[in-house]
Length: 408
Length: 194
Image (tube, rainbow over all chains, first blue to last red; front, side, top):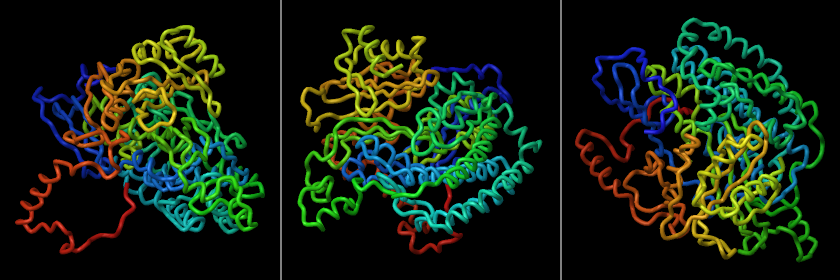
């Protein structure tokens, strides 16, 4: 199919009698984490050819976004990576703010950093739970869901939703955080490091876990770059690329944190990276809580479903000249600056990029979503080729793909 | 390196190809001719002080409703980033309306494989020398390319596979399968599954 970057086929691990047969895994397969179909060409238990098929969840978000205003487009991003919807919302808002040159108050930046990191914890917990379950460790699943529940409750307290938040908005966030939310969050991050230690006692040096993960799905740094991997999949191979450090957005340049790197590039290295990332997320949240500045939570000029605050006040005052008021938003004229930007954010799965073209209208002329899962699934055929079919499950788990994001 | 400097370097290296460059919101984009796109991207990737080794995104754009005149019907947009040097640049390659073809860059990045398939699928731009140019998100027998501006939001016609699917449902019906799903008792708790 594609240019082979590895020659693992020459050493079949458990080759059969040379007679090939094909197997269709999915789309309804528990270990594929959604509606992913993998067409396999097998020789015994060894994968000769692996062709992932996606598109079962395609909802045409890029087309839909062209018909919606910038504020309306936000809800589409909830449905991308529904495990970490908050991080997607933040990514969208950061991109639109950059496109339309909308400033964000400092307090909103800190709050968004907190919720994005909570989202990262949620996603990594669910990843660890299902990844361990795929490999056969049931207890980890239950432990992880215990902590994830606390986080979802916190989100519910913050904005009323548990999965599809739409809490950040262009130019800030929707509501301010309450004292009780901060207290609950503080209690959670005090206790969470000991919970991570609990997961580690279960699997970190577990002999079965090590047999299933060490040396499986090895990717060198160069291969990972070639395949376009980002996030923990790239850092597990030792490439230091984290957008939070490289091109900081929100409050990430105000806080200290380390970027965990692996060296082996196998399933175990990616597992270690994500576990360390959870520790770093806790560090970031702690610093954000400590430094949380007072002030407004949304820029008055920011467009939204309701009228911008500035327009509301000018209409009340009986004046007719206003900046980005609702009436001008509804009229089809040039209200925004024209141009194009590509803005990427570090979501739990990797690099989520939005490429926007504005032609001055209140709707994006073109929105392209660079979703990490799509590119990771595209890389799967090269990673899995020549390995055992059981290791394919470990590989899909460790690439951490979500099909909602992949298919858009 | 400053992004504008990269654009100038590119212009001096490929004077025939680079048409225009501009900066918007701190990001520099270069409008180029499509013929030597592979050579340009290879040069950007392999030159020592540029090292644009990360292909961030590749997508197609339909310019037919753009207000500014002088743009070709389609564009293929490459966003590049250099992980060692931490700079970025965007290339916008012009693609004409009659025969929307541009050379594939899969030989430079394997990641471009699926990105180009997606662009072909949704925008209808073909990539020469692509190893496996098929639809990726839509069914293989889909008609049209949805991201083109003339394609209506609700689609043009019903997907051809739909009739086949409905016949299959009818066939399964004789085994007690309820297409409405009302008859079946829902079992199990609702899950927030992946």
